[in-house]
Length: 290
Image 1 (cartoon, rainbow, N blue to C red):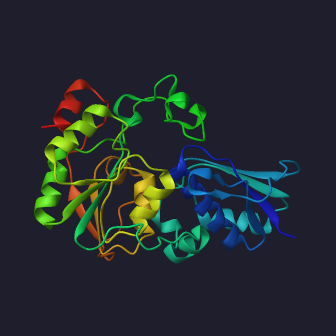
Image 2: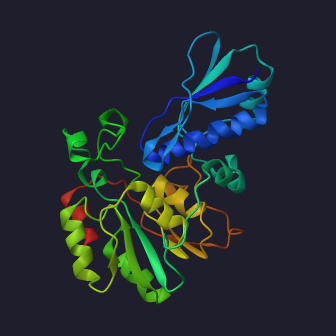
């Protein structure tokens, strides 16, 4: 009988997808575990049953860097009744793209993405400008997960991107811009985008699942600095994925994270950016609109 590997989720949809994929990979390698307690309602993903946390459980806890082969061996050969996982595990070498796509079982249908004449630009705004509002659940920033699953302040490795970067991408690619994501969650940023790009398509406020399917179904994508954005593009069949080498995508800033695909993945176009710790200061915000 297979044993439960229980996901103790933390964060929003992107973080939770990584946690699900990591546990599924561990379970696959061990050969004697199944993943339990998956809960990603933004994307319509939820385990059928909730595992009981009792017995001799092996606890796996950390941030991103794990010895996955050693952990799989411990799960396979140890005398445990199951295991729990709490972490983030954002390292590309853990994952097989085909296996993750099979797990997700989510396909972008006709009309959910944008074709080869468009550049789909994913926007992450909202709480990364100034940190979450004390009443963030009623404001909608906590979504279905609540305030306990939000970073408590401005995250130094998640940052909004300057309008000049989008201007450069649009000019270099010659494609028509489509802005998708949290475009309406920070009023000044939204207004600046509309002023700078009056002929762009703005998809407006939609569900996270709609945005995710749009990324998966589009031909050319420009990432936000976001795990959600990264996964939507990585799982897609896009021809081109523009990745800013900044924040959590910068291996020099976050050596424990590895989300910068190797040059052999020719879908990706790297865009080096000045290294900074995002604080959401008035000066940093002003630079976004320059």
